[in-house]
Amino acid sequence: MSAPRSLTALVPGSFDPIHLGHLDVIDQASRLFGAVKVAVMHNPDKASGTFSPEERARLATAALTHLSNVSVHLHGGLAVQAARDLGADCIVKGVRGSADYETEAQMARTNRAAGGPTTLLVVASPGLEHITSRFVREIAYYGGDVSPFVPSVVADALRSRRRGT
Image 1 (tube, one colour):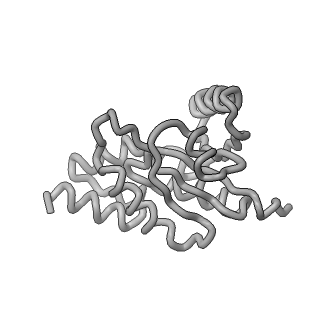
Image 2 (cartoon, rainbow, N blue to C red; image 1 turned 45 degrees about the vertical axis):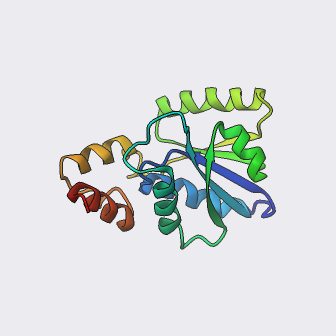
């Protein structure tokens, strides 16, 4: 089945850091849509996480170079506003299980009521559903090996951050 390649999808998230589960969702979206805009979301009123929004966008860009129809953008505010600003026809979100489904379905209904586009929920590929940015950050904080969970550019950045370089 082929999708209309002229449609643009938005994949929003904090991506702190981007991990293989995120890449899986973005890859699935890239095969369905003509263009995929990854919105590294940030709230300027909140303290940054492990990486600044600019660092997260740089890491996401480096991790996604193999997908020619994907671009990365920084955005503050709501996903529905990012969809409008970036000309997205659809918001794509990944789900790992029933808890994610409930949260994302509620958010999709809210976004739709706020005038946002339709949300497509993409199921995580087997073997990736256990990965979360929070667990990656915790493993990295304690000096563990995060390479099974993140692209090499992210693993390198986390190692450098831990060493203080």
